[in-house]
Image 1 (cartoon, helix red, strand yellow):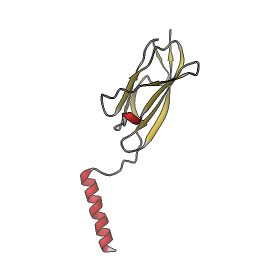
Image 2 (cartoon, helix red, strand yellow):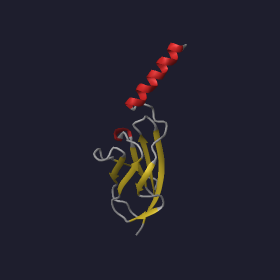
Image 3 (cartoon, rainbow, N blue to C red):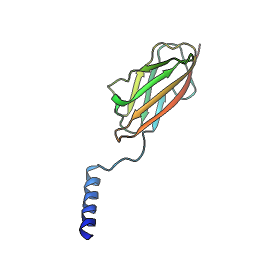
Image 4 (tube, rainbow, N blue to C red):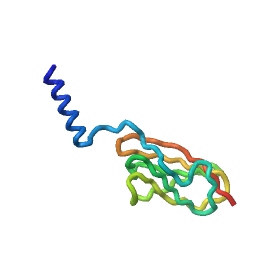
Length: 121
């Protein structure tokens, strides 16, 4: 039993030194454009969401739902900061929209959410 505990303690020290301890938290939004309930101008919209963790951009998603219910995927720009997803929508016309985001953090956790916004005249 002592040998087991000693090996367990040694493994914990190695993990702490190498920074290989698992992260238990999900990616959390630090800032977003658009923000919830924001009114934006008609036209293309530059979407930018910053998280508190590195994001796997290839496995993350952005989708905009139009007032008609039509959904359009937004391509995520591969370059840029590792904790930011960004993309540009097609031209948006006035009405209520929903931005749905889903990210896979490098720690393996999937987080998703919705940001309602409107396009004004």
